[in-house]
Image 1 (cartoon, rainbow, N blue to C red):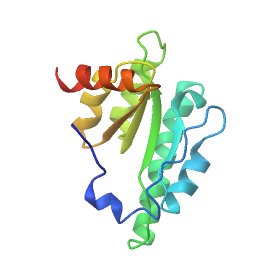
Image 2 (cartoon, helix red, strand yellow; image 1 turned 180 degrees about the horizontal axis):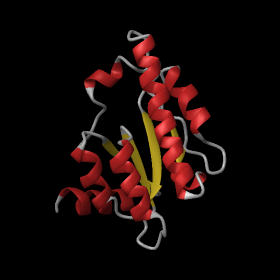
Image 3 (tube, rainbow, N blue to C red; image 1 turned 90 degrees about the vertical axis):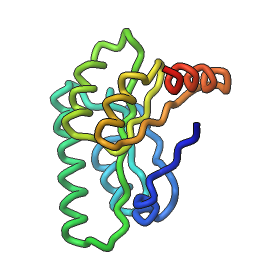
Amino acid sequence: MTSSLPEQWWNQLSLPVISAPMFLISGPELVKECCLNGVIGSFPAPNARPIEVLDQWMGDINDTLIAAKDKEPGSKIAPWAMNMVVHRTYSRLEEELELVKKHQPPIVITSLGSPKHVVDVVHSYGGLVFSDVSSVDFAKKLRSQVWTD
């Protein structure tokens, strides 16, 4: 199975690029500036500590991008992405998933585990899930786990 960006997103992009979700570097200001300039901005959820800060970041990103679209409907404003650790031992997984339901990031990038329950949530509101893997073998394993269940 292959996936691509929704057709309406192509008109929002200056470049088909996702800024890297850099640990301890990427935050809401970088994400907003990327998106406002037609590049998909992203950040790792663990950068926002405690969980209440993550809630604020996600709300601020949505509010800023919606206001910019309202102000200049024809401008290229890209969607944003959040990177989630989905390993079953990650202590914030369920809390972060609740915030994904609340704020509905257009793209969720998953790492370090099966994205199965994240896929269900994100697809329920029309978002996309990209899984970050470290090898072709892990990509094949992931594909068989997620798309055959």
